[in-house]
Image (spheres, one colour):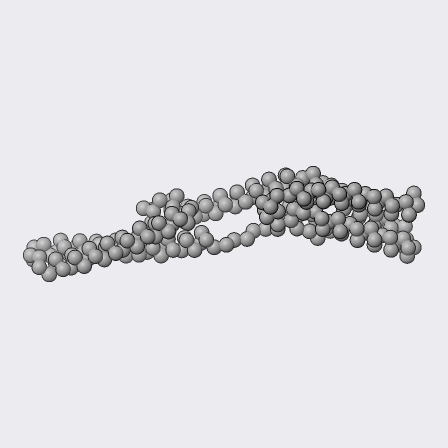
Length: 224
């Protein structure tokens, strides 16, 4: 095979693969693009590319073919030309493999996302169980709307406790000496509940911030 025939064959392969890639990229759903936007599907020695779309790979293959043509025109050694051809064929093979495995890569990314969410929920549950605020239902920790409801509930409790303390202190001034110790103990108990409730409010506010804090994640998989 002459070098001109070799270049012609590579360009035909490139054109055919380009059509397949265009169809592939056009069929990608927005959710798939978003899910795999940070995924590296190839070894860095093959392509510099992230995400589900394979169009950038086609452009890089085209540049490799153009570089090969320059090597041929420059009458470079046969070993150099063959090495360039092998590299181009490796790239063709990698893109074809990626075309066939996109659905698997998407499922893998989805599973990684589910695993990450499950681990985060487990960490939150463990943190909650160790927090000392076990009267707050663990399920509340998984939902920002419920967290806000729980926050409002505790804020109302604070008002209720403060009002109760005020009432008890007013009654204390006029109660009989025999009842004062009992009432003082009751005031102390309500103060403790008030303090615990305020601690819980701080805890819930921290959980809300952690729940709503944006997180970014990078998925990595390779077609070698």
